[in-house]
Image (cartoon, rainbow, N blue to C red; front, side, top):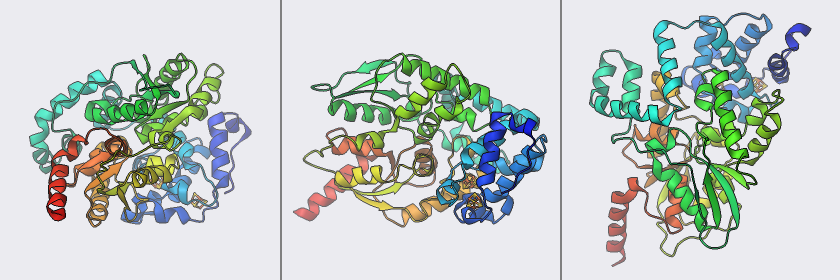
Length: 442
Ligand code: SF4
Ligand code: SF4
């Protein structure tokens, strides 16, 4: 695609990067077929190619974002399916991140929108504050339907997604010693939302890693990876959250990996090198941390995992989180690990399409998110699985809100099959399955 940025514009490294991305696009439109928002409504402006044109026009003319551009960029899930499909290697992620930051700087959203976004940015990344929100949401949960009926769709979405139990506590900074001889040392990103909603995920990761002889450190000072605010265009906050992690992990000394159990966070940590590329103080350390980042399944695939004598052998519908399959290109490892441990893994039809979770998307765009969830749940349920596995708490929460099937993290199944406990959400169902198969065997 031809561009016409001036030399003065190109002196800005963000504009120069975006120009490079725009020039790579040959507007072939292959990406439209795999874009969830285009698939839903067929609007070119809600396709990657349409958004690329809108962004080009806005940046090239150095214009403040308009309501129209903001609408279509806001509807983008940042699922990155378009990057998987694009034959020209267009780095849509960096382009849309730049556009979001530009919108945040130049567009004044309506007051209620500003309030909601500020609340999300100031509450979600901070476990202590978010705990209070979850406790309040638990009290309001019975009124989710009512909120939806009177038009408070975002409140309804938030209440529906809130867990039906009191929030847990975030994991404290500490070191988990390996069982037996030490064979490696990793930092674990505890994350901000993960532990409050589902502490069993990191607990399972720690059990599996330490069983394999890996020392696991939850570093003092590490916290939210920055992706929640990054996707809202709040660059300054995202960079400062990322800096805290870089400092915390660098202070630990030699590490084999920074292990992440939430794939949305993993995609962002792997991008720290790019985010700090022009920062003379952090660039080198950020690139090093980014190079160490591994999804838990990616890291485990390099270790000798062995299944416990009695493997559960359930049918698993594997939901490939967009951030894992498109953002990090980790596709093979979760399936292979589960298969190797005795599970029957089934791929979900149209698995490239997002479930509608996408960070805060299911709160900010509840209608599109609900339609994507309904579609995803239909394609999962047709597999008649015993359980849904995913590598991202956001997907688990989003999908679980639309089905009675249990949704667990992939690492929970890996832990269970290698000697750990049955995942909490499977306990009742597993005992029924076990009773059925015992009856069939006798
Ligand atoms: S597939 Fe790639 S090159 Fe083709 S329109 Fe989409 S982003 Fe551009
Ligand atoms: S990131 Fe996802 S929603 Fe956004 S343009 Fe690409 S495919 Fe469409």
